[in-house]
Image (cartoon, rainbow, N blue to C red; front, side, top):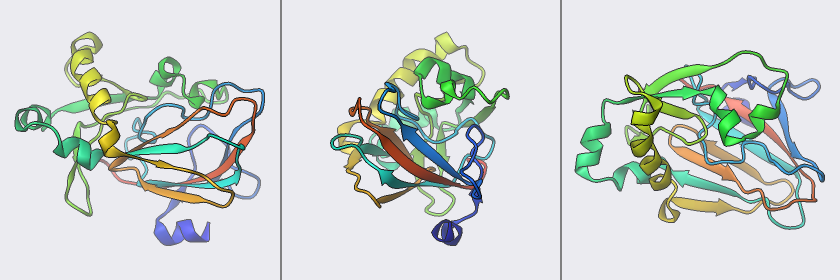
Length: 216
């Protein structure tokens, strides 16, 4: 918590209650008998909020004997690798992001039954980082439903291209966890994917989310 406060403003996660005494710290775990993991798909955290988080921190408490790595993808690189024509097409477009899409993509959120509220937000498809000034793709397969003003069916072909493009191997790295490892990523220009390849084993992490602002 001390480190998180030095980096930004910790906030509570909308769907999961924090651990005892620390409401901003949530436990991210997969138990031995479970088959699905938390957030088990490429995504940018809670893009369905009006002000998505600036960043997230994940601290490894218990790790499996193998597997459980996390992949990260630079959305700076993903945007910059697009053709000039595609950049012109995407600049100015807005995307609708919904928490309800978790039911389709089978992230961990759809199994958290305590929540009743549905979240939806529109954000630029290409956002400009408020500190670096660089442009980054800001759609993700976990939450982005369609483009503003278009139906889901009309939006699907271009979104499917972007979803494949933005996680190409050349834009990614892979983080191997050890007990005590801390990953801290910039949610404004990064996607991540926790790899679900350790069935039968336990993995327990602590996560803190830092407040962000409205994408522009």
